[in-house]
Length: 199
Image 1 (cartoon, rainbow, N blue to C red):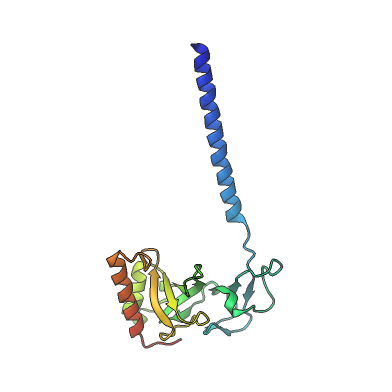
Image 2: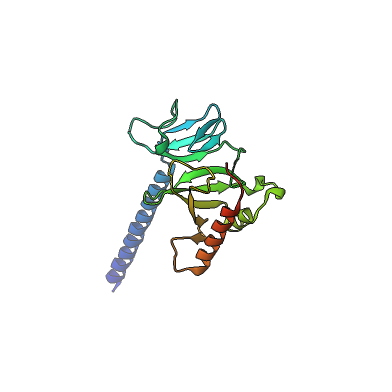
């Protein structure tokens, strides 16, 4: 009887050790992935330049899709516009998109979707510049997904904007069966189209 209990205890201890080792290994793997440096090529603007229809100020970081293993980290000159994946403004700097101060624009990750996500800084939005559009956007979060016709134009050109794909993770066109989400995005798109702004 005593030998049986010893085997059970040894078995349980081995199970605990194996499960613990597995969890520890997974945690180490995640830490390694998180801490792996991003080798994507990027360019920091030294003067104001127009990129994808937007006037970017000095010190804007333009990140590109990695095409070749030897093209990585900071570049001395801009790469091809079609390879841009992200535009990030310098800390404390914003530009206007749809009358709203934004800090960055990220191209949609899904290649089947043509568009980008704009990130607002509502703390920099002057009270007298608030609109129904900006208030709706602010009500769900700072990120807004925009579907467009021309992938090379990220400006606020209403002729190029097809739809509002998302507002944060709260409202998504993907969830077609969710009427509340669809109605909110429809309203947001209508208010965007009413704006008399082009930048």
